[in-house]
Amino acid sequence: MGWSQDCDQKVSREHFLSASVLSQLYGNEVMLQGVPWLASDEKKAFAINSLTANILCRRHNEALAPLDAMAGRFFSAVKWMHDDIFDKKTLSKRRRCSYLVEKN
Ligand SMILES: [Zn+2]
Image (cartoon, rainbow, N blue to C red):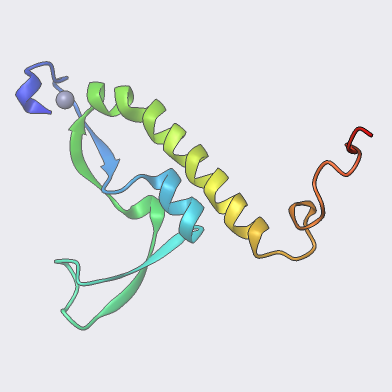
């Protein structure tokens, strides 16, 4: 965001990928392979909270935080729908609006 010439002097630690999205998809940790700090054939689990680097200044990091939170809520809704679709016991598998009947 340096191109904006509106950065804070302080740099803050930020996740490479949205922590809220990663935690919706994978829980507390992710399995990584092919990242620069591992051998090419090495696979290793990392806590999502540890996958940070000095990417953004504090101002831009804080400005993007609501977008990150919204992405987390969006992926939470998608995950809920996914889980619901494949769960045969949920209400969505039952006939919807069964209390509405056709008018004679
Ligand atoms: Zn910045």
